[in-house]
Image 1 (cartoon, helix red, strand yellow):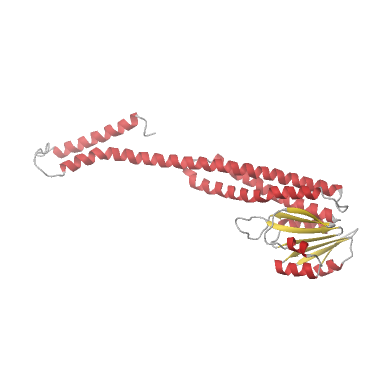
Image 2: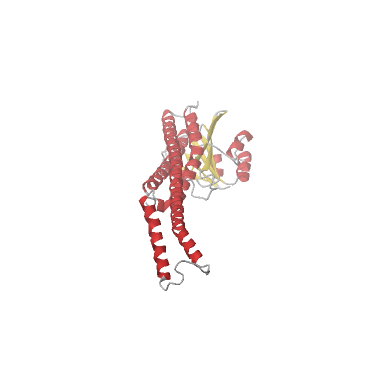
Length: 316
């Protein structure tokens, strides 16, 4: 079984195997599993002796942040960043936590960056009970997400400052990326806030007042991030519309220049076509200087057409 455990006593925290942690009678035991759903299900059911209605949410395929009080314990599902590859439509990995008095079991499929922070807190003696561990997870996850959301806003600020018709394609790619990421984060931040708030209000003598305060602080941070990504999503939509308008204006300008060129050459094409018929009776056909005269006439017509467009300010 892939994972680790901690036995937390009054004076120290000791890292042990999953099997030893499960058999420990320490005041607080943390078991963390990082395995496939099938292996985790088998261990949770056969070794940890958990009922199916707890095993199923701990190993579910599709998860959203949630919090449920079950019997004397609590089930909590949170989403955080991972350094492993995920689907582009789901940018956050989940950690599922089952907590009772003196015991916490957490399950992940992808390595959660916040897990390293929580493990350091446990090893450093800053976690003494299940409430401390859950608060540490909530704080680490929201603390890791906060600068990422802030960076999205900064990226959008840079795009707004660089708004230029010459950079339309590059800016549209960046704005689309920011918008997609903001939408993905928004899917989980609002339910995560609700889950943390529900956890903070949950009955249970293993949740201390300081744990509840930390959970509410994490919920407030999640709410602020949810508001920020919503603002980013709306700003990116407006930015996308502005870039679309710039692109349309660019196309209009190019179409106008093509139309002006066509208008310049339209009378010239008529004259050259007329004199290319090679029939009797054409004006100046017998004169030796006729070619120069026709060229001068074409140049005069071209200048007159361009001057007319310039006078109407179509060339700006």
